[in-house]
Image (cartoon, rainbow, N blue to C red; front, side, top):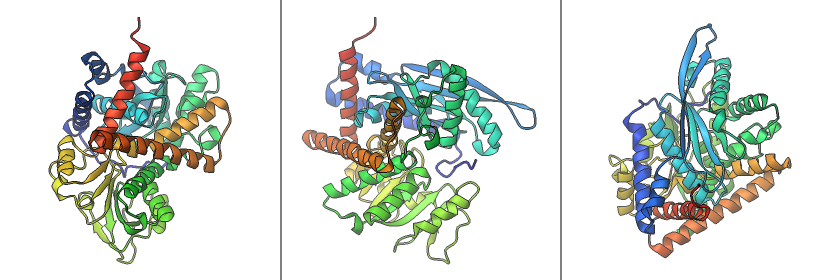
Length: 435
């Protein structure tokens, strides 16, 4: 199994990861103040309902034993079962998973899905494991977090460095231990095992839809704009492809952890995607096109001349150090937490519009909801139905956030957070406290 590392860089377990939690909590506090939310509700929403840390020992192919640390955090089940991905990365730690679980709660609320937020991960460099070792890791991790999983309790999905195969192993492990076939225990599975058509492209398609909806409200034609995409992994590559092929946008720059390309006249994405599929690690490195582009770094891509910037790599990419150099007038966040709190304020002062992550990349969890529903009913949709329903859900969520922002004279991030917090708090209030 080829392991995608292009959306991540090697990081330590300290400050860069803590920054995302810091940013999320500060945005949350702003929403609390704007809504005038009672302190009791604030305390509930600030904290995770449940946090599990597990040891994940596996046999290596040479017979040695390695022990990895895994996490699963359930932030809120007020609006329904917890939902969120599982990532394999050396930088995974509890604070990162805690922040991502919080963001998932808000994302599900913005999309008005009957889910709460969860997230999980294992601190591991998957590039250093064989396919069989990855399978052992996945199965042992699934068994360790099984006590808090459940088709109506907590439903995992793929995330960074995990994919449909990972979810197949997880689903099979739970099914074997449960003694029943339980395809609804996870989403993002292969179609043959109860996965949904269109799930692989869903997050990227949602980013593309959010981009087009934002451009419409600015009175701009997608065919007349240039787009730079940082992070040409699953999300970024599909967003770029869909924007180019279905909406006519010009993709002028792309990048991943191995570097990037820039061509002011536009890049030909088809041969680049073919190169990625053939590359052992699915990276842009070693791709050549007879000098028809300029090689750039991830950092350089962020400050290029482009109408739209899509940061679809990792968190904390736009900071106070480079926010004043951003030239794009519209930022659509494909990654989770790519913009720091301080950078967000700078962008707002400069009049740069930002479609926040909890709205822009909600396409993945929306399609995961579709998959979960299909599994529960054992009735599956075709690709056209999935795309139609995804487009409807994304456009509805975008319109609700946009309208809320206009009515309350606020930017889209503040609007999305406020709308999400209001919905979560209302659910808590309606349910009451047990006992």
